[in-house]
Image 1 (cartoon, one colour):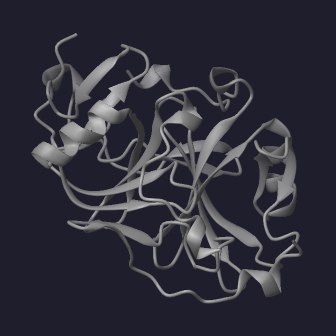
Image 2 (cartoon, rainbow over the protein chains, first blue to last red; image 1 turned 180 degrees about the horizontal axis):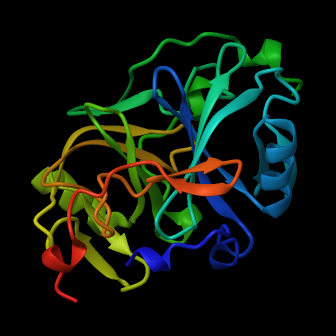
Length: 130
Length: 130
């Protein structure tokens, strides 16, 4: 089955986009899920800083461009189907989440529902211009 | 912004599906990316074993039903937008990847391209009936 492995990222399957799992390279916490198109991939390779494609805004997005919370890419992995990436990053600043947490996954399923299981590190109103 | 947090998983945004990042609860390696619909979510809650929705086969899928490599769910997290999950699992058997690796992310980006950076643990031909 090894010969099924290909070199190119399969952007076609997801209409030009691949999901990107972003993981803190030290704590190994999952920080966020984002998407890349070909251009975001190339910009990330050129600069070493994570660029994504924002589906809601319909444009290329340098993570941290507004908050200063850039993500320096330490390691990139690809899955067996060539259609999903893992970026292991050095998360600059206080966090990846626009709600003020280190990770977007700051709530855990408990018997009584989703409970906040992480500490808020910054006030988004002071970081983002809204 | 806290009051934007909702209790329900937002299946509607992704046409009935949410992406699920599956992480080994001990090594914290990312094992795979899968998708759940409402039914897969409910089956997972009922049984404690990860169920997904297979987009290629168009049906509910108990991870491990063919290989015996079940995933026991230890912890579930949800992101700030309520549209992505992280499952931290106890991966039974040798691995999550149908190509014989512990993780589907067994290749790392190097100067010369994607290089296999993990050890193959089982022969898929002996595990899956194809």
